[in-house]
Picture 1 (cartoon, helix red, strand yellow):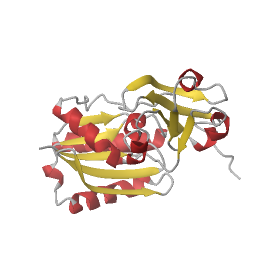
Picture 2: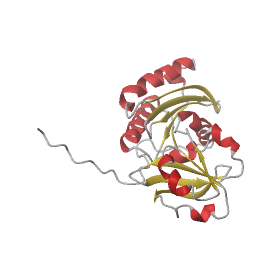
Picture 3: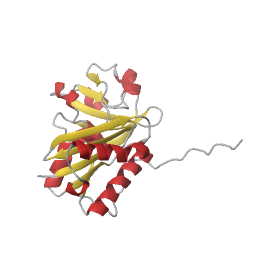
Picture 4: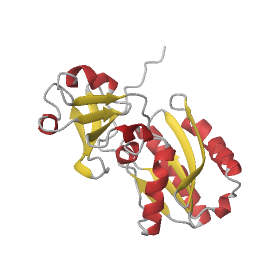
Length: 228
């Protein structure tokens, strides 16, 4: 029976969930901008306490691998790797977009294709396409959304769009009869629990020393502000 600490920091949400044998026993999260560095240790401690576990009871650490916020991903992965090194336990990575599709609100779409979206720059989103069984139909990519986006799927299917990148695309995509939109779905460590349990059972682990987040695009730093 695996006891896994799941970490999600790919967006403005900082989320921690404890899974025991694939069931969520504790979840704590905060959506307060990018305050992950200040919040994550407290959320981990609170989650372990609620689950009546000590850090040394854990069998693995699971982390959302991206894409998403460069800084958020760095924080989550750094914490996860540090815990794995210290506790000498495996590291599991979970694709952010694919875990987003495990949200319970999507259960009311039993036949639709699923397109989770994370916000990128301007009209760009990170997205992939999955079927109703959450099996990949199209790999994760950066898409500049317009009226023709996802047309190859919308021609013959109903497609539900969701995630924190969905709102800015709704106007362009709503012209298609088969387009549906599910609001209020954000990445959460709770959606990682069943995935990380399956990966642990299959010993689908990462190399702790060499694992890096999946940024999808290179980090571009903003110009420094001029000193007054």
